[in-house]
Image 1: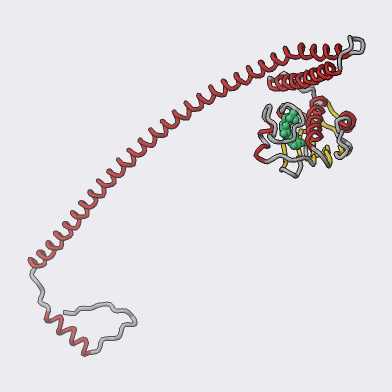
Image 2: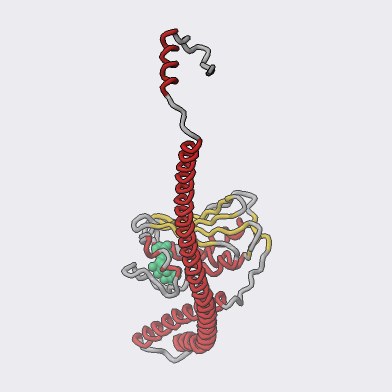
Length: 335
Ligand code: ADP
């Protein structure tokens, strides 16, 4: 019998001795019968079948585990969906409650403004009458009064004047809050407005140690706004500066920043602690322990209302001992 086998090109050529060994080995292997062969193949087939069966079982186990995991994921998904729906229902209910609360707040604020407006309006007439009567009593044409009576009438008149100031401020604030102030927007030249402020506030700058400086705005200083309301706001801020500053200066300057005008009222007064920066814009709030110089605590809330009506903002930068800067920022094109 001739047997052949391909070998790699670089394999060493078998020596005649090696070939003789191969021959001897082949001669020793006795071929099995067809039955033996079949038995061996059967054994291999059974082993292969066993392998397939065990793989199928493993697959079934894996499938079962997968199905279990799927059921878990589905249950988790359902639970999460339910929780989400529950939370959503809560949020919707919360929104409804918030809406209701803000409607109540609006209603309360409107009644407060109406109450303030009515009360202050009703108070104005009798207080004005008291001031008028006081003036009459001290008039030279009336019966002469003793010195003490004259002093007391003066006290009554000055208290009534304070009360009238408070009533007027309350009325202004109530009007601004109820939206009854309609800004009358016109093209305003800032230079005459500043000139007028310089003139009217000079009378209030009574301390010789405090200088009032109203800087001339650089031309062209035009702005679309309500001149009267702007004047009121700046007068209020400058008046506060003059009230609270004992030495140094109170300065007003205007400068353009893009499409806005910034009005800065700076003073070298006592300054205001950062934690009170919001509070001083609340009605009736006055910094405790500050030098008592009169006032009602209504000026700043009113000023901020007006600035908001004009489409702007009123901000404060201040620290105790470093003075204060109130900045009104208004859009050039108007509200
Ligand atoms: P009023 O001046 O009538 O008291 P405002 O609402 O104008 O009321 O001001 C509230 C408070 O803020 C003042 O009482 C004062 O304590 C503080 N305040 C306002 N402006 C200044 C300022 N320029 N410097 C220091 N404190 C100020």
